[in-house]
Image: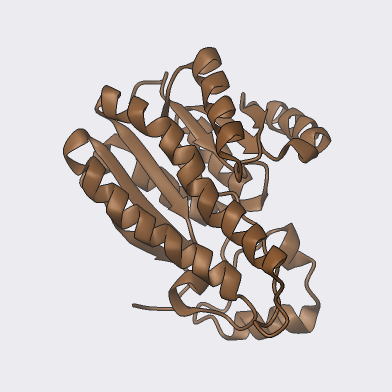
Length: 248
C-alpha cells in the first residue's frame, strides 16, 4: 500500500470511529476524522489524545447531513492531503421511539445523518476514486438494519438502506478498481453501552451467543481487512460482526 493514501472516517471521534481511525493510521494511511462542527472542543481534545499515543490523525468539522458542507470538507481534505482513497461512513445518531410516538423530526434527523450522509460524502469522493482507478468505501451499518428492532423504525430503515447503497455502488465501481462493502456490527462496548444500567446490559449480553459485547477494535479490524490492497475482490458484501446475534 502507498503510504500517501488518504482515509476519511465520518463520525471518526466516536467510540467505533476512534478505533477505526487508530487502526487505519497504524496500517499506514493518512487518516482524517470527521466530526460535527458543534463538537470542535471534543475533537481538539481527541486529537491531543491520539497524538499522545503517537498517532498523527487529522480532524475536520463538517455536517455530513448537508451535501454542501460535505463538498466543502472533501475539497479541504484534498487540498491539504490529496484525494480520498478510502472512505468509511461511520457517522450515526439514534432517536428511538415506538412508531406510534415517533415525530417527523426524529425520523428525518436519523435518515439525514445515517443514510443521506452516505450519499453526501461518497458522491464527493467518487469521481476522484474513478479517476485514480482505486477506491474503498466501507459503510458501517448495524445488526438492527438486518433484523429490525423495536422502537427503531427510523434507525433500522437507515441502516438497511446503507447496504442497498453498498450493493448498487459495488456494481458501478467493480470494473474501476473500487470496492464498496458494508459492516454490520452487533452490540459494541463503547461509552454509550457502558453507561447502560447493569440489568439492561446483562439482558443484551445474554442474547448474544458469545455472551459478550464486541470491542471497537474488532470492527476496526474488519475495516482494515476490507480496505487492504489484498482484498480487492471483496465487494458488495455485508460483513456481520455481531458475536452470532444474527446469522443470515
